[in-house]
Amino acid sequence: MKKLLLILFAAMTVSALAADTTVKGYLVDRECASELGSRAGFGPNHSKSCLQMPPCEKSGYAVLTEDKKIIKLDDKGNEQAKKFIAGLTKNKDIKVAVTGDLNDDTITVTKIELQ
Image 1 (tube, rainbow, N blue to C red):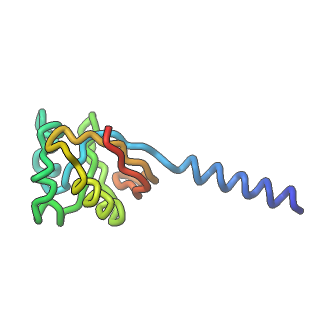
Image 2 (image 1 turned 90 degrees about the vertical axis):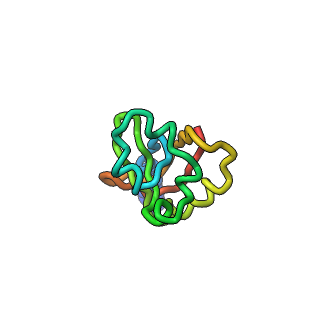
Image 3 (image 1 turned 120 degrees about the vertical axis):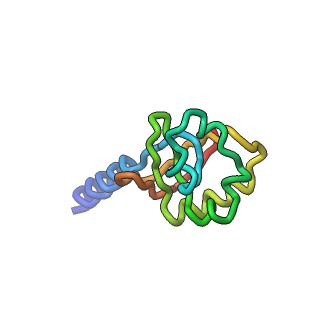
């Protein structure tokens, strides 16, 4: 019985770890990304000050990938992103790696790191 429980626990641990995905790209707000995300240079030129504007902050955040996909952050991820943005020392070219559970076009965020 102990072996069975140990095997089940190990299998659950492995499957939980396998669910984590890292998405890399530029941290953007959904408001601007929906309108401008496909334009050349948008990601590197999107600014910290824009990310902190009330309408942009209210729209939520996303990662704009190299192939121009917009991966939205979940609600908890948006709160993490606000804190992350507040602590940034750079104003543009905000490349990030966001780790979490990716489901379609939304990621349930566990970690945001500057690249």
